[in-house]
Amino acid sequence: MSPVILFGLLLIVSFVVAAYLLKPSREETDIQRHIAGLNRGTGLEGGTILREEMLSNSRALSEFLRQLPGSYALQRLIKQAGSRWKVAPLLFGSLAAGLLAGWIASFWISNDLLCICLGVLVIFLPCLYLYVRRAARFRRFSDMLPEAIDLMARALRVGHSVVSVLEMVGQEVAEPVASEFRTAYEEQSLGLPLREAMLNLTQRVPIPDIRFLATAVVLQKETGGNLAEILDKTAMLIRERQRLRGQLRVYTAQGRATGWVLCALPFVVFFGISLVNPSYERVLFTDPTGRHLVMAGLALLVIGIFIIQKIVDIRV
Image (cartoon, rainbow, N blue to C red; front, side, top):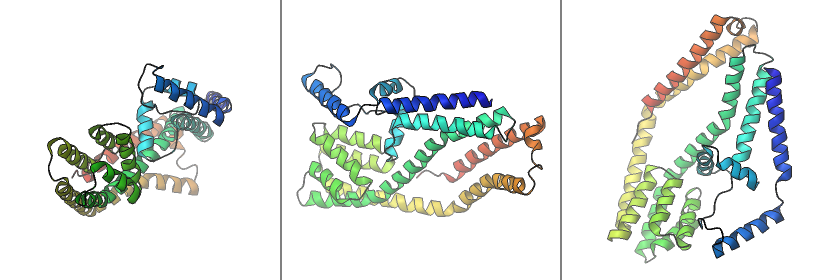
């Protein structure tokens, strides 16, 4: 398997280097963007007037990636995580890292299936990092959202409009709330209806708290009412939900700690015994029965992680 993995690794590295060398310069990119803007302004393209996000610095590579399933979902994950990564470097870098990991593992592990599993695991590690980063960003957003809603309610009471309130939150509140509200204000200022701007905000930050806020703003816009009072009640509701979530995290802390210990213990024991006596556990990878036991153990470990996650993940 080693020559095949090495050939694939060299192929991907060559493709990445060629794409990097052939990418347009900054001046060429500015010229293309200016021409595209003129075309959109004159209606020559005949398509949508909305700006399409580039998946890569190379337009040809970006168009190729648009045809791949899951590319837009990956791009949305990157944006929700607050990362500056592009889809193309992430895909090819993950693939190259997975092939390299599988090739290196083939020198110590004689089982091709385990090498492939290790390579696949390394390929998905960047996506796992993005999921963790997105979850942390959403938690910060939820923690800061009541403060932003209080600012909106106070500004409405002194006579500001809803649009100016969005701009004020984008300027006064810290990240990540500021950037999302600033984007909603810019969309509304460029002609997008307030309803669509708030719906886009809920798509960029798909958490229940922001849906409560968007629903309150849209309902007040369409039916009328005292928006400041509605926002006060929304902020109180969000704070109560956060307090309840905090209590649940305290109650489930032991279960989550137990899950982490049970998941990490087999690997810690394996590497510990391997350091003390490297030949003791080699039979697990050389004997067919040992390989079957390793695969069964990994499958049971994944099932256990899923069950523990379902037990401690209580929706509020």
